[in-house]
Length: 300
Image 1: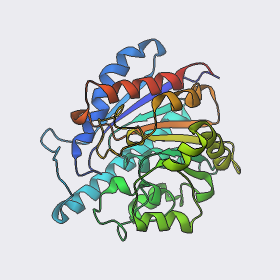
Image 2 (image 1 turned 180 degrees about the vertical axis):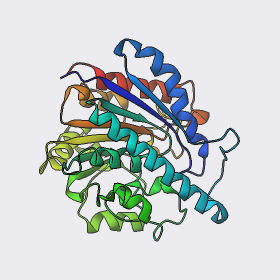
Image 3 (image 1 turned 90 degrees about the vertical axis):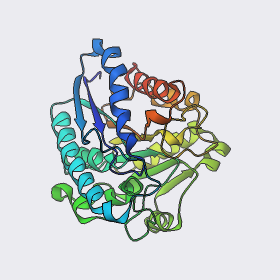
Image 4 (image 1 turned 60 degrees about the horizontal axis):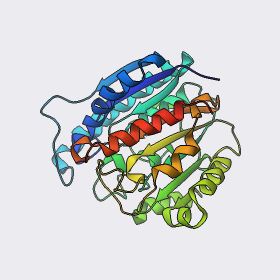
């Protein structure tokens, strides 16, 4: 089934200390909107910043924390409603950010579009993103979306749409993890979330890890989504991201696995996050993102 697509570009950097991640959506839109014109996609651009609000900080300051949290709430509410509308029109949403706090809005929207339909989530990331305010030293929202989707953390984020949780731990698998902190690891361990560390991927190969992860998250539901933080890739091919970690995935290994996802009626959405064009080199990361999306849109 070749579904029509909806491209949702989310200019949001409120979840990260380096707020220039908000520029990633616009940079990608410049290329994709023209490249995919024959697809006749529905295109939406959501900009949550004033021109002078893209600050670069090592850490979100305590005095600005409430502003960042309130802005992430606004982003999550707006994005979730956009995703609901797109899915209910029968379109396949491709959400492009923006820091990874957008996942709160993306996957809340997927759930709220059909509240009785559980779904699995394949989460490609160098980091766990499963902090709560109690465990996070930095307090950065982009390190919290998985905890929120599992029903833990900021009340307004967790209770978005009054369906809690948005995602069950048995329907979640993380792939490519190679940097994390004790508090978030303990939360995932307590909930028995499936994790394929980068070391596991290197031992068994990404193909096997992907197949096992997909089988795991769809044990109790046929439906699933895919979230890709570009920092899951090796910095040699994806330097344009907020927090690079060495020894990551290679595009040649992932591209064949996501080919034709648009044609799979059980795949509910695709999300790509954490592209920071201000850190890119020779458009390597931008090219990678375009290649990922084109592969998803190919016939399977």
